[in-house]
Image (cartoon, rainbow, N blue to C red; front, side, top):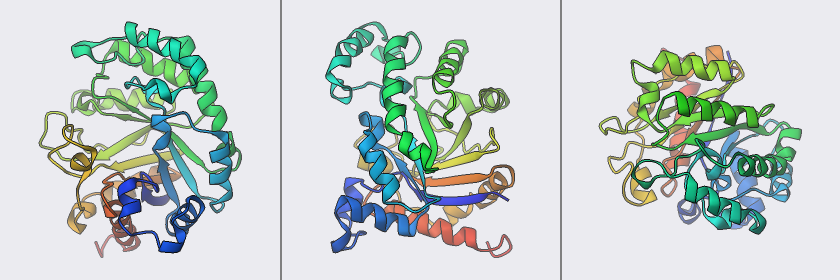
Length: 305
């Protein structure tokens, strides 16, 4: 049976900082991370989606957490085909970003993502991104790199080719893939998607979200690598895909909603060495409270739940 690690998708979210979860004497950068790591064994780093990380921060994160703690690091937006601010890159790379943006336009004005992107730019960004994370990998604290592809990254030959290039670029690093287009996990496509990720050696990310929208990703939980399985809980707000971040992710999980996932999570642990269960309903302290509740439920025997 694999180890199940429960945590949240950020420890520095502004809503969490304002919510009073951290004690008054633990609100500096070092105090927050140490306090969090005393209570949870895994966290997702989402700041790396918005800007290139620094090696200095990775060194500090490793110093401030105990052995065995895991950081799941979200890939920079450029690496997954999301719109990327020039300020996210060093000044010398920004002209190439502008040229890429002018070329790689997809349906409805959306960036076409990794398909047709400037591979030379992506290679350079990846080298800087991965280099900054070496301290986490060297100290055994890197759980996985999370590549979350956008809703317009639809299944098909071009997307599969782009995914293959992404995996080739990140060779030697643990990669988890989350699809935001529901077609990847439709009943007709599910087996093919699972086989593709297995062949590429990447972890499939299962998600919990509201299931009444056209963009709803079904709660499929396959195991595509024996090393790791990942589940991300986004909340069940009907404003998903619209409104502010707070509106999209505002949700307080009930015990009954969490209990729906207990059999799935336990099945994942039967086939993977580690299972990371991460809560992204980041409004005030909702994520940490949900993580605490899920940990408590998992501690019970199946007959008790």
